[in-house]
Image 1 (cartoon, one colour):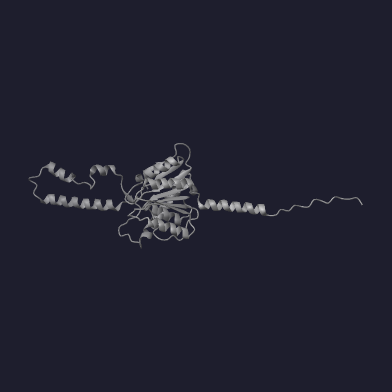
Image 2 (cartoon, helix red, strand yellow):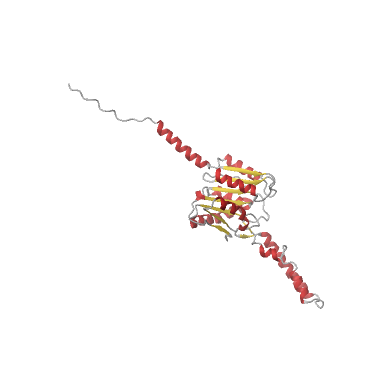
Length: 294
């Protein structure tokens, strides 16, 4: 995968690793606002946002249609009378519609990508399409951890829309691959078999999201709670399907203030062990009785 965003600490080694996955029909570069906010808050973190490995299907279909129309037009031109046409007129017709957005916009826009196709997507096939992405994504995460020398506990996996769906699925299938997950406008495609014990999942959603309704995050939280998972949910009113600044601020606050349940359990277990040691009666050998002369 190409990595359009790879921001490393200005000095010293990376202490945290933040990996951000973009949404459908987008690119890693579109995660820049979230990446910048996290970079400012955690200057010793390495922040990476890759491009998905698959070309966005909308661009594939558009290009195929454009090429077919161009071939048809060329065939028509060869068969038509061309006495009244000039070379300048032909050039103008060929350049009239190179892309729907125009040539300048196409030149500026990064290639759009997708993690999995949504054509003919149904609830029945959705889990399988997500699952097919996970082995490659897991290998990529492990490779970045090894390359940058950051362990799983200090790794944060974040995503928007398709990227959030993959982040949640990866955390559920590979517990502890990352210490935290930031899922913006995501959901589970099916109930998880178990909740991660070594990963905290933070869910963020716009209340007015019409693409992936906020009920997707609400259901995810309910499933995780039923399975004893460690998860939080923030919903922003008046926000749709977007990486809104209000949700970004919620994410920063969660990362700074939320103490993972596993940390509480570890601390509680240590405290109980210490208390048990204090409560246990101690015994010591009795001092020798003084000897008396007969």
